[in-house]
Picture 1 (cartoon, helix red, strand yellow):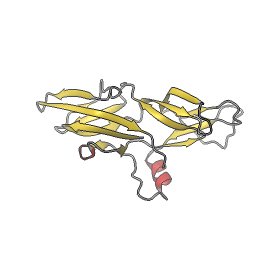
Picture 2 (tube, rainbow, N blue to C red):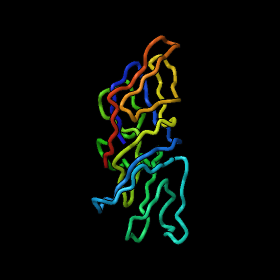
Picture 3 (cartoon, one colour):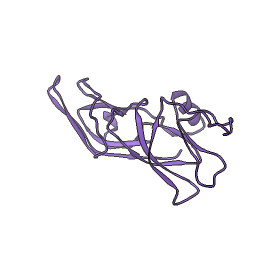
Length: 174
């Protein structure tokens, strides 16, 4: 998952990995099979359901497409998973916080491993899914709604406005 935004007096933007994240997924083998607005939480693991193959590792989201023999799964990767997944990929940047120097450019903020499904939309819910730190060091954790394309607040400790505008998200396979 990549983010792009114009930042004003923002030092960093971090995706909270223990928040409920809303996204839409599609069947890569079909043009019409989608599931919109599914919620994934990287801190909640799912085990294979009874009768499912135990060869599938624990994951964060699963669904079974019509006519499929087994479930399609998604796993949100932690630092070790990201390192292993990108080991053979050259020139692919690992997900990290979005920083002031990234303003106006695309930067990866989350990585997922998918089997039998692919995400195509990220829908910020504004339920503390992001943490914003101002250039003055004030941390904002509440009411950060990025789904409208912009966000603003005021850093009263440093007497300066703090904002993000032209916010966009995109999924990219690597």
